[in-house]
Image (tube, rainbow, N blue to C red; front, side, top):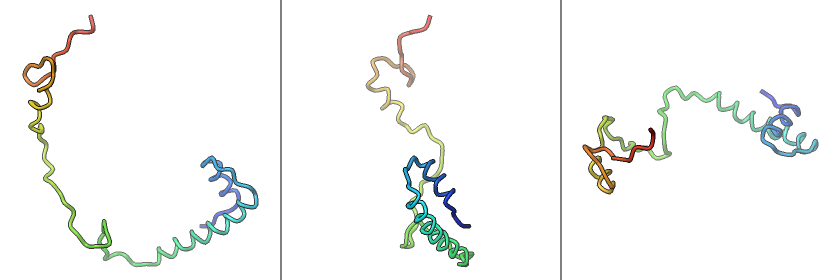
Length: 95
């Protein structure tokens, strides 16, 4: 994939950046070099490499994925002016 001056201008416009013609011409070369480096990564065989979250191998801390009510209903309504059976009581506002 290569970048042309029209692509650079379009990306600059979408990014709301003011780019002069000479800057756009310079960016064409720079972006093509960057894309060349990225294309080199396609040559690397990573089929046996496990995904990593860090450069140091470590296990991620995980918790059990279970649905609970949180056991916090009493704490949540403790400061409410009025509550009943774990729910807030509020005055009626719609007739």
